[in-house]
Length: 194
Image: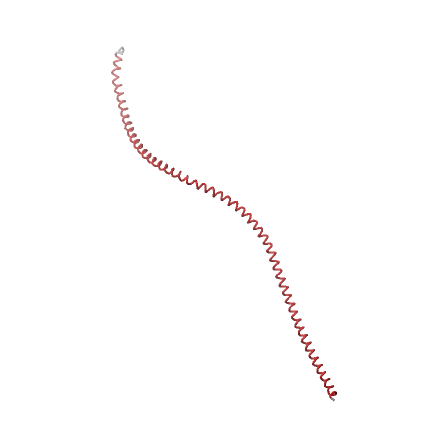
């Protein structure tokens, strides 16, 4: 009887166990499917993230490429500018050499300034002597001018005296001619007298 009672009980239990097993399998299947769905969603998100990352990396790569191309073109320009600067430096170096030559020449000429200064001092003394001599000459010329004025006065006096003497000589000539008139008349009367 126990066997008979255990038979249907086991069948019912088996059915219950099968139902529980089916439920457990379906719940497990649902869990697995939900995990697969979650994994698929995560995989999709990961794919989107990877694609976005690849796109971003592509943009970064393109930006780096553009930057490198720009830098390479700028490096060519910079190298051209640097070569031009080198040429300018050579020119500046040549100019500096010439400037150094001019400075050396100026130093030599400045060294000669001491001699020029001493010669200038001697010339200053000579000019001072000449200035004093010129002052003395001006005084002498002033004295000579005074003497000349005095001589002019004397010459004027002599001229006046000469004019008076001319008048007196003319008067004497007239008197002589008048006095000679009687002698001529005597000579006419006595031609044989010497």
